[in-house]
Image 1: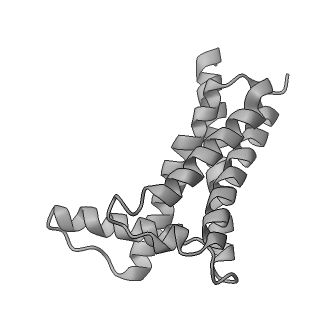
Image 2 (image 1 turned 120 degrees about the vertical axis):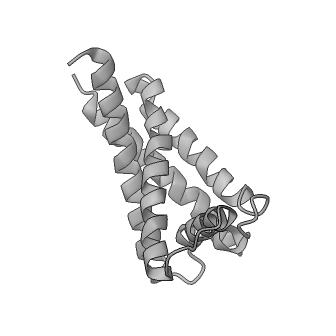
Length: 151
């Protein structure tokens, strides 16, 4: 395997680890914490919006929820895989920065995108959890990347 292929696989694998950890945290916490961020709702709204623009009928809510979770995992995995642009010794800083940027985006962007603000910023606690949880995903990504790059 070439070095570039190895780096790509390590980056994607690390991003997938961070994305799965983030989604697991979101899905578990929303069942127990009333102010928990609801990335699933944002995803469902985004899918509905896109499908309606192309005159397609969105699926029922249960299926739509599954699509949203799948979309979250894929998009976050690809985003977090940007960790591969960092040197392994900078993984924690890079993962934290990726998570911070994603968390701020998850708070700031849904409103202007027409998806509503409540799922990620209805209370100060929701905002803090949103940003913190995306940072958690970035740090899990960093840990996986560092582990995969041990020599």
